[in-house]
Image (cartoon, rainbow, N blue to C red; front, side, top):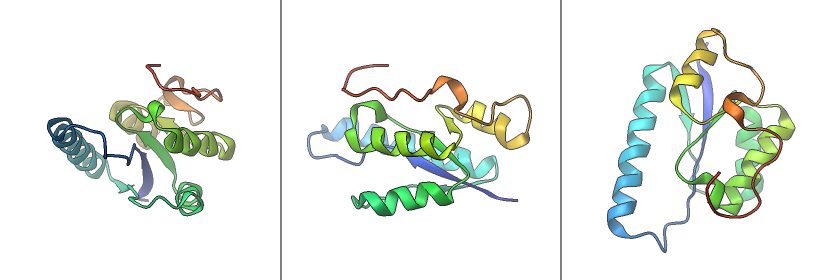
Length: 124
């Protein structure tokens, strides 16, 4: 079965320098490719409609974070919603790959993301 994986990533780009934006797109392309290689179907919405994004999360099998998600209020909201739904959340492709293969990955709140999502910007 193909698993659907939601990419929780900041969408705001107005204040991001061009070179940083290009680097983020490069990393996102690499993540999309890696997800395809492990047999997952990535979903990465570009819409700002919160209810639509939350509905997509509900229909996905897992969540993977990308970029500095913890600095974006809307993405922190997505992670909180996913945690409330009991969705597994991953911060890297290796733990997602392990979960997909069923080997030693915790099916709930994987890779150290707990029910406490940071409220402000800054590093985790």
